[in-house]
Image (cartoon, rainbow, N blue to C red):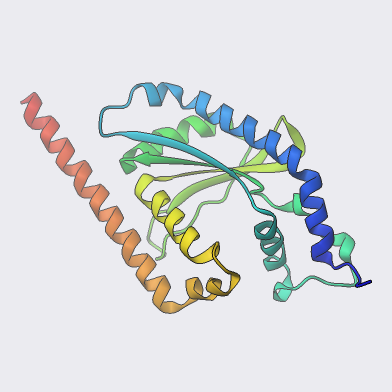
Length: 215
């Protein structure tokens, strides 16, 4: 019989943790929707606050833990060092907003509720760029050992990430190298820049229309 690998033990751990991850996700999503209800009820017709959630898939969790190790490899001599509960995003909620200016009030309300959580923003492509997404991780009452994570991101960027993830990361592991190529990084930056310019133009024109209507 072949010797069980560290990956085998982690997969077993994943399905043992899965009920607790589900409870953490349910509580986190419920609390976020409750906190954001005043904003959601006050939205005008073009504005959107979209809340989605997901449990990190087993192989994705194992790969994420592996990438955190030196050289991207597990130390086969010390299997006890590794646990999926050390990941910050086994349970994740994404809050997507349109237009981008809604990110600030949404972030402020969530920060009031999750004030002890650790900030881990998704950086922009250039040093001077604002974060692409505001991201935080911490514990909820459903389980004191499994962390949850939530993101606040513009709707256009969040939807593009869903397309990118489905096209590159999910179909086959071999395509992960595509995402790391310089050409793909440049094209991804082009898309994000274009989406941000679209949102900025929309907000500017919407303000002008509102001013004209009031005038």
